[in-house]
Image 1 (cartoon, rainbow, N blue to C red):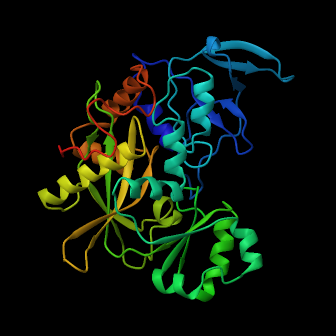
Image 2: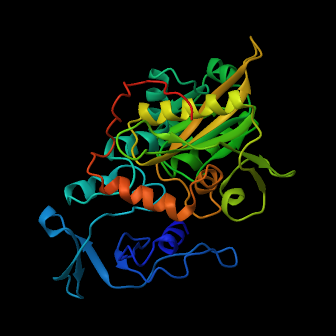
Amino acid sequence: MSAGSVLAALDPERYEVVPVGITRDGRWLLHDGKALAIEDGRLPEVADGTAVSLVGDPAGRGLAVLDAGQAIGRLTEVDVVFPVLHGAYGEDGTIQGLLEMSGLPYVGSGVFASAASMDKEFTKKLLTAAGIPQGDHVVLRDASGALRADPALLDDAARARLGLPVFVKPSRAGSSIGITKVTDWAQFPAAVATAAAVDPKVVVEAAVPGREIECGVLAAPGAGLPDASLPAEIRLRPGTDWYDFDAKYLEDAVEFDVPAELTPEQVQAVQAMSRRAYLALDCAGLARVDFFLTTDPATGADRWVVNEVNTMPGFTPISMFPRMWAASGVGYPELVDRLVASALSGRAPGSTPAGAPDGAAPGAG
């Protein structure tokens, strides 16, 4: 769906687009770019097209067509790739590594930033090292095997520290796939098994009460500090327990305030922390940083807690990232143009902008 929106936004007078879809079994196919929308509650899927393969030799500059016998046919040169892919094999550094090996510029973060941002454990570690608050959590390695050995998995001290509810998540997944909200410890083993079916490493997070706020970060033209958008807020409609996959994509279960109703000081704080998170993870091009805005029980002051960092956020015109930038004065076609220009600018993916030391807290704007 995001890819269909990007395709529609690319000016045919400026761009010659070569749409490539990926099937469920991993085949790359030339696609017509049509019918990329939800119909009757069914998500779009790529199934038919001419088989292609990325040329591993940087001199090849693009795609080779494969015939029925898998022989290499004609080549299609590519100047830049816009990998509009969410989740595993899209945001986790794998496709980025393949593009690096092929010598192709691409939109978004590089191998390290993509992998680190996709892995919730290491996102938390890197952000904590940069002084950015995280919610309390426990990491379960080889969760499937551990669950068989000890169905309880967490000792009484860990359960007391985390409290209830907790969210049990695959460490490396997206779109709320495999996540369970646990309100009774009797539900915990089944929740771990659900998450471990997606990823053997599982993260158990304490619930953070508060408002859900998001902020977009965009590489600035040239070598300046990244820009931060006006933030937005996600509000669940009555009867919706939490922001799961169906609430995100298939149900009319949430409301969005774009921009969020925040004080100028709160806007500056979330923009500054979004930039810090982007730089701490060595991101490039774009990112959406998701927060909980809660209250420090000791002081009563605002406390911003980063939930996650998305290096290729949803990109339909009604997705939060484009909407936040539209509210900030950057329309959808201009947003796409800026990202393509950034990828073509020759800067190494993930490079830190000039004048921004590691962990710096740049000013808001």
